[in-house]
Image (cartoon, rainbow, N blue to C red; front, side, top):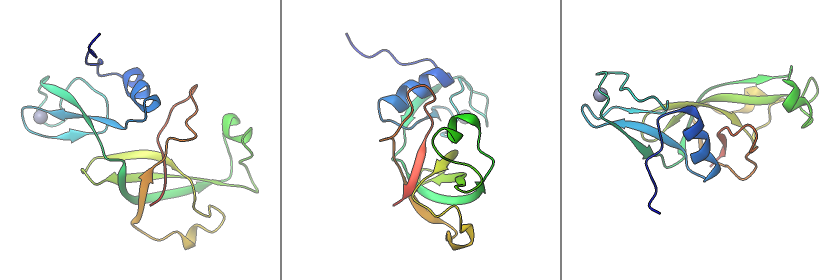
Length: 137
Ligand SMILES: [Zn+2]
């Protein structure tokens, strides 16, 4: 059975993540790339959009280290004494995605360099809550 194009929803985006793919939406009218799975171009409002796979490489543009963890992360050992890092990654294709950042010292955020090169790592994807994770490349 050939793959049918998935609808432009968060559920489809998550299904792609489980397949190991970071997907976004490309506008066939104006060429705008977006990391948000919406059936509408954010620039020209065209509905002529298609899925586009991103390389998963980018740079960490901004980040914050959080020591008050939500319950799901608390169970993984994050919290006051083990903060976790979340940030905005600017993909090499241009769009920005919000993601967890692993492999950095969240206890010493001053040591995390600006524009750190990062790469997608879906090896520890939580199938219940799929979300992109990046590590220093
Ligand atoms: Zn467009």
